Image (cartoon, rainbow, N blue to C red):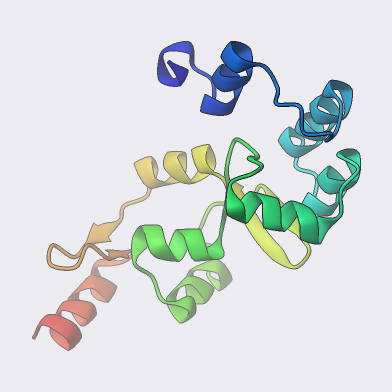
Length: 150
């Protein structure tokens, strides 16, 4: 249903089932937190809007008790998606080869998933057919194939 309506699964669930009575934040606080999230506010600010602490919100997000959408991709997400090492990603950042981050939360850069999707569409990535790692240059791919796949 979420895909058909062009919205997130949590919104569909709320529409069909209503918000569970958890004693949590009221609808106005939830709406304000969502506006701040969409505007790129740090997680600590979103937590405050919900009357929550950052550690508690982080725990709720990890457990699935809370969801913040759309998803923000962190550096580790890019490394998983493209098969990069931390050093390769750092090199790509230093050379300005990645899309400009949509925001910073503390010291961590983040991107909306749509930003990374759009960048991937136009970037000339070179994929290793054996292990599905992406390389920004054909030279990097050749070195990888020689070093790992002989």
